[in-house]
Image (cartoon, rainbow, N blue to C red):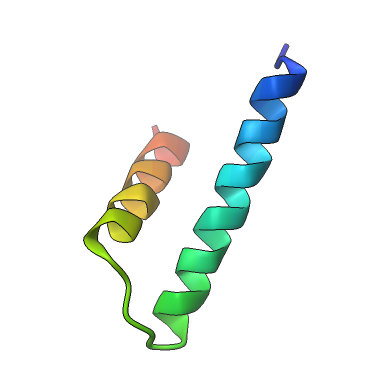
Length: 47
């Protein structure tokens, strides 16, 4: 079972990933760090 702190971190990560996705979809510039976070999350979720 997830600890409460882990759930909060996950929610924060989800919010950040959603912001990165919105930037990509709207054609805004994204940093390499943002793209790396997104790829890591995609890989983690598909593992």
